[in-house]
Image 1 (cartoon, one colour):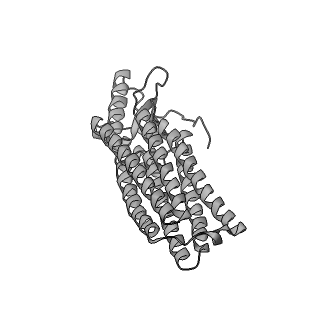
Image 2 (spheres, one colour):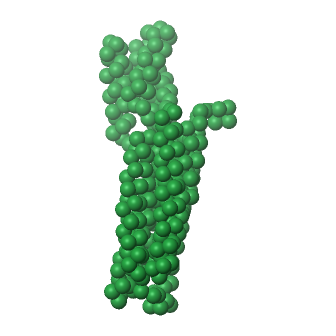
Image 3 (spheres, helix red, strand yellow):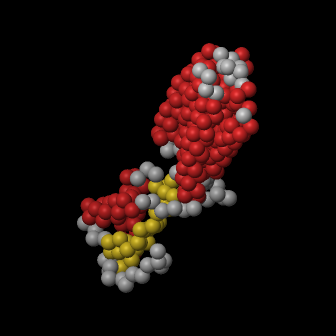
Length: 304
């Protein structure tokens, strides 16, 4: 856990420091190079600083141990952080789109000065740096299964995409086609909104106790029967329910076995299966197992 905390803190530090220096560089380049697109891109980069801070706070809080007020833990704080990041991304994309449409509608883009070479260089640097930050953040997000840092990684990539649009616009303006800046911005807006939608969908699904997919549940049932068979216990699965709790999974099982066995034996089987499931599936935080006697006329409590 200490290694994980250090890695998370390091990742957040790289994100904040990298974005602050990149934003300052873009603002200077945009001002000197007379590029409104680059200045707007710098504002987008500054929003990444806030996004990284939110992701860090969300992930840190989600790692807190369960307490009296939160007996199931704090994993859903990552979902809250993802929703905030999705909102930031959505508003950023919407702002880019509105500004581009407004510039086309009132013709103000025609009055912009021709951007200098430094603006082109700044855009290229931004694309390379932000794409590198995307892969850096995504590596750790996947390693620690963090939805908040995955959202933060996509925020980095959205900035790289924004810089590509800025580059196209700057090159277009330098070659007598200034409207390219605005058209590229509209395309970027759509792409950013699509990414934000995906982040919202994933976070909300995890907050609503969404079940795991059919393959996971089928594999889980097969594992339970196979593992019990290793100890020469004949069991069947009457019910298997799963629910996602942030990045973790809760499992509810009802299994059947010989009704004449002792309560101690039934408890032993349930205990063995409980530990085996949590060992095989690291994302499973808790397993609840109920034993039914074989031949019991089982009725599903809920219809789907």
